Length: 194
Ligand code: HQG
Image (tube, rainbow, N blue to C red; front, side, top):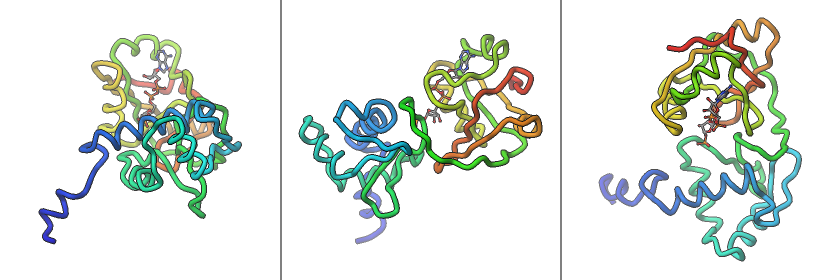
Protein backbone atom coordinates (compact mmCIF):
# COMPACT_ATOMS: atom_id res chain seq x y z
CA UNK A 1 0.00 0.00 0.00
CA UNK A 2 1.41 3.43 -0.83
CA UNK A 3 1.57 6.34 1.54
CA UNK A 4 -1.47 8.07 0.17
CA UNK A 5 -3.67 5.08 0.88
CA UNK A 6 -2.08 4.62 4.29
CA UNK A 7 -2.94 8.16 5.22
CA UNK A 8 -6.48 7.75 4.03
CA UNK A 9 -6.93 4.69 6.19
CA UNK A 10 -5.63 6.22 9.41
CA UNK A 11 -8.48 7.49 11.55
CA UNK A 12 -7.60 10.47 13.69
CA UNK A 13 -9.43 12.04 16.59
CA UNK A 14 -10.15 15.16 14.60
CA UNK A 15 -11.34 13.42 11.44
CA UNK A 16 -13.45 10.73 13.04
CA UNK A 17 -16.56 11.96 14.84
CA UNK A 18 -17.18 8.61 16.53
CA UNK A 19 -13.69 8.66 18.12
CA UNK A 20 -14.23 12.22 19.30
CA UNK A 21 -17.63 11.37 20.73
CA UNK A 22 -16.22 8.38 22.57
CA UNK A 23 -13.30 10.45 23.86
CA UNK A 24 -15.70 13.01 25.30
CA UNK A 25 -17.70 10.21 26.92
CA UNK A 26 -14.48 8.81 28.42
CA UNK A 27 -13.56 12.26 29.77
CA UNK A 28 -16.94 12.43 31.46
CA UNK A 29 -16.65 8.96 33.00
CA UNK A 30 -12.95 9.00 33.94
CA UNK A 31 -12.78 12.59 35.22
CA UNK A 32 -16.19 13.41 36.56
CA UNK A 33 -18.76 10.62 36.80
CA UNK A 34 -17.38 7.06 37.15
CA UNK A 35 -20.56 6.22 39.06
CA UNK A 36 -22.54 6.76 35.86
CA UNK A 37 -21.22 3.36 34.72
CA UNK A 38 -21.04 1.88 38.22
CA UNK A 39 -17.22 1.81 38.07
CA UNK A 40 -14.86 1.53 41.04
CA UNK A 41 -12.16 4.17 40.68
CA UNK A 42 -9.12 3.80 42.92
CA UNK A 43 -7.42 6.67 44.75
CA UNK A 44 -5.12 7.34 41.81
CA UNK A 45 -7.97 7.51 39.28
CA UNK A 46 -7.60 4.06 37.71
CA UNK A 47 -10.53 1.90 36.61
CA UNK A 48 -10.46 -1.67 35.26
CA UNK A 49 -10.49 -1.73 31.46
CA UNK A 50 -12.67 -4.85 31.19
CA UNK A 51 -15.28 -3.39 33.55
CA UNK A 52 -15.26 -0.08 31.69
CA UNK A 53 -15.87 -1.77 28.34
CA UNK A 54 -18.49 -4.20 29.70
CA UNK A 55 -20.41 -1.58 31.68
CA UNK A 56 -20.31 0.94 28.84
CA UNK A 57 -21.68 -1.63 26.40
CA UNK A 58 -24.40 -2.62 28.86
CA UNK A 59 -25.37 1.06 29.09
CA UNK A 60 -25.65 1.25 25.30
CA UNK A 61 -22.32 2.95 24.46
CA UNK A 62 -20.48 1.34 21.55
CA UNK A 63 -17.15 1.01 23.38
CA UNK A 64 -14.67 -1.74 22.53
CA UNK A 65 -11.12 -2.47 23.65
CA UNK A 66 -9.98 -1.65 20.12
CA UNK A 67 -11.64 1.78 20.25
CA UNK A 68 -10.09 2.47 23.67
CA UNK A 69 -6.63 1.60 22.32
CA UNK A 70 -7.16 3.90 19.35
CA UNK A 71 -8.22 6.79 21.57
CA UNK A 72 -5.34 6.37 24.01
CA UNK A 73 -2.87 6.23 21.12
CA UNK A 74 -4.33 9.11 19.13
CA UNK A 75 -5.79 11.60 21.59
CA UNK A 76 -4.36 14.95 20.51
CA UNK A 77 -3.74 15.87 24.12
CA UNK A 78 -2.93 12.39 25.44
CA UNK A 79 -5.91 12.66 27.74
CA UNK A 80 -5.88 9.01 28.87
CA UNK A 81 -3.29 6.39 29.81
CA UNK A 82 -3.25 2.63 30.33
CA UNK A 83 -1.45 1.19 33.35
CA UNK A 84 1.79 -0.63 32.57
CA UNK A 85 0.06 -4.02 32.56
CA UNK A 86 -2.70 -2.65 30.32
CA UNK A 87 -5.44 -3.75 32.74
CA UNK A 88 -6.42 -0.29 33.96
CA UNK A 89 -7.02 3.12 32.41
CA UNK A 90 -7.22 6.67 33.79
CA UNK A 91 -7.48 10.29 32.69
CA UNK A 92 -4.13 12.07 32.87
CA UNK A 93 -5.64 15.25 34.36
CA UNK A 94 -8.77 17.36 34.55
CA UNK A 95 -10.66 15.46 37.26
CA UNK A 96 -13.41 16.83 39.44
CA UNK A 97 -13.78 13.56 41.40
CA UNK A 98 -11.31 13.33 44.30
CA UNK A 99 -8.23 11.52 42.98
CA UNK A 100 -4.57 11.74 43.89
CA UNK A 101 -2.61 11.30 40.66
CA UNK A 102 0.56 10.94 42.77
CA UNK A 103 2.43 13.49 40.73
CA UNK A 104 5.76 14.63 42.10
CA UNK A 105 6.37 18.37 42.50
CA UNK A 106 8.55 19.74 39.67
CA UNK A 107 10.25 23.07 39.13
CA UNK A 108 8.38 24.91 36.36
CA UNK A 109 9.90 26.81 33.45
CA UNK A 110 10.36 30.56 34.05
CA UNK A 111 7.10 31.49 32.34
CA UNK A 112 3.83 29.68 31.73
CA UNK A 113 0.66 30.68 29.89
CA UNK A 114 -3.02 30.54 30.66
CA UNK A 115 -5.69 31.16 28.06
CA UNK A 116 -9.09 32.37 29.13
CA UNK A 117 -12.11 34.19 27.78
CA UNK A 118 -11.98 37.99 27.54
CA UNK A 119 -15.00 38.30 29.83
CA UNK A 120 -13.15 36.60 32.69
CA UNK A 121 -9.96 38.66 32.64
CA UNK A 122 -11.07 41.47 34.96
CA UNK A 123 -12.08 39.00 37.70
CA UNK A 124 -8.91 36.96 37.21
CA UNK A 125 -6.59 39.98 37.46
CA UNK A 126 -8.38 40.93 40.66
CA UNK A 127 -8.72 37.52 42.39
CA UNK A 128 -6.03 35.53 40.63
CA UNK A 129 -6.55 32.24 38.81
CA UNK A 130 -8.65 29.81 40.79
CA UNK A 131 -9.15 26.15 40.08
CA UNK A 132 -12.95 26.27 39.82
CA UNK A 133 -14.30 22.69 39.79
CA UNK A 134 -11.04 20.98 38.78
CA UNK A 135 -8.25 20.05 41.22
CA UNK A 136 -5.76 22.58 39.91
CA UNK A 137 -5.35 25.63 37.74
CA UNK A 138 -4.12 24.42 34.34
CA UNK A 139 -1.18 26.19 32.69
CA UNK A 140 0.75 25.58 29.49
CA UNK A 141 4.29 26.08 28.19
CA UNK A 142 2.83 26.80 24.78
CA UNK A 143 1.09 30.06 23.87
CA UNK A 144 -0.97 28.45 21.09
CA UNK A 145 -2.19 25.64 23.34
CA UNK A 146 -3.18 28.18 26.00
CA UNK A 147 -5.02 30.28 23.42
CA UNK A 148 -6.91 27.22 22.17
CA UNK A 149 -7.95 26.41 25.76
CA UNK A 150 -9.20 29.99 26.25
CA UNK A 151 -11.07 29.93 22.95
CA UNK A 152 -13.45 27.26 24.29
CA UNK A 153 -15.23 29.93 26.33
CA UNK A 154 -15.21 32.92 23.95
CA UNK A 155 -12.73 35.32 22.36
CA UNK A 156 -9.46 34.25 23.99
CA UNK A 157 -7.03 36.30 26.03
CA UNK A 158 -3.52 35.17 26.91
CA UNK A 159 -2.17 35.59 30.45
CA UNK A 160 1.49 35.27 31.33
CA UNK A 161 2.35 33.59 34.63
CA UNK A 162 5.61 34.38 36.41
CA UNK A 163 6.11 30.75 37.40
CA UNK A 164 9.77 31.16 38.28
CA UNK A 165 8.92 33.74 40.94
CA UNK A 166 5.94 31.69 42.13
CA UNK A 167 8.16 28.63 42.65
CA UNK A 168 10.79 30.77 44.37
CA UNK A 169 8.04 32.03 46.70
CA UNK A 170 7.08 28.46 47.64
CA UNK A 171 4.21 27.58 45.27
CA UNK A 172 4.27 23.91 44.27
CA UNK A 173 3.95 22.95 40.61
CA UNK A 174 3.10 19.57 39.11
CA UNK A 175 3.23 18.38 35.52
CA UNK A 176 0.67 15.85 34.32
CA UNK A 177 1.75 12.93 32.15
CA UNK A 178 0.42 14.80 29.13
CA UNK A 179 2.42 17.96 29.82
CA UNK A 180 -0.16 20.19 31.49
CA UNK A 181 1.28 22.32 34.31
CA UNK A 182 -0.82 22.24 37.46
CA UNK A 183 -0.85 24.56 40.45
CA UNK A 184 -3.26 25.21 43.32
CA UNK A 185 -3.86 28.87 42.40
CA UNK A 186 -2.11 31.83 40.79
CA UNK A 187 -2.35 35.02 42.86
CA UNK A 188 -2.78 38.24 40.84
CA UNK A 189 0.76 39.45 41.62
CA UNK A 190 2.16 36.75 39.31
CA UNK A 191 -0.18 37.47 36.39
CA UNK A 192 0.13 39.76 33.40
CA UNK A 193 -2.23 40.15 30.46
CA UNK A 194 -0.45 39.87 27.10
C1 HQG B 1 -11.42 30.64 34.59
C2 HQG B 1 -8.84 21.30 28.67
C3 HQG B 1 -13.14 34.07 36.69
C4 HQG B 1 -10.28 30.04 33.80
C5 HQG B 1 -7.64 22.19 28.46
C6 HQG B 1 -11.05 29.10 32.88
C7 HQG B 1 -7.08 22.42 29.83
C8 HQG B 1 -11.67 32.33 36.38
C9 HQG B 1 -12.21 28.64 33.75
C10 HQG B 1 -8.15 21.96 30.76
C11 HQG B 1 -11.01 32.63 37.57
C12 HQG B 1 -12.05 27.24 34.27
C13 HQG B 1 -8.53 23.05 31.70
C14 HQG B 1 -11.47 33.74 38.32
C15 HQG B 1 -10.00 30.95 36.68
N1 HQG B 1 -12.54 34.43 37.86
N2 HQG B 1 -12.74 33.05 35.94
N3 HQG B 1 -10.88 34.14 39.48
N4 HQG B 1 -9.97 31.77 37.74
N5 HQG B 1 -11.03 31.28 35.85
O1 HQG B 1 -12.22 24.26 31.93
O2 HQG B 1 -7.94 26.01 32.26
O3 HQG B 1 -9.78 19.37 26.53
O4 HQG B 1 -11.86 24.23 34.47
O5 HQG B 1 -9.56 31.02 33.08
O6 HQG B 1 -6.69 21.61 27.61
O7 HQG B 1 -10.02 26.42 30.82
O8 HQG B 1 -10.68 18.94 28.83
O9 HQG B 1 -10.10 25.17 33.04
O10 HQG B 1 -11.54 29.79 31.76
O11 HQG B 1 -5.91 21.74 30.12
O12 HQG B 1 -8.70 17.67 27.98
O13 HQG B 1 -12.28 29.56 34.86
O14 HQG B 1 -9.26 21.57 29.96
O15 HQG B 1 -8.46 19.96 28.53
O16 HQG B 1 -12.29 26.37 33.21
O17 HQG B 1 -9.09 24.16 31.01
P1 HQG B 1 -11.69 24.91 33.15
P2 HQG B 1 -9.25 25.55 31.74
P3 HQG B 1 -9.49 18.92 27.94
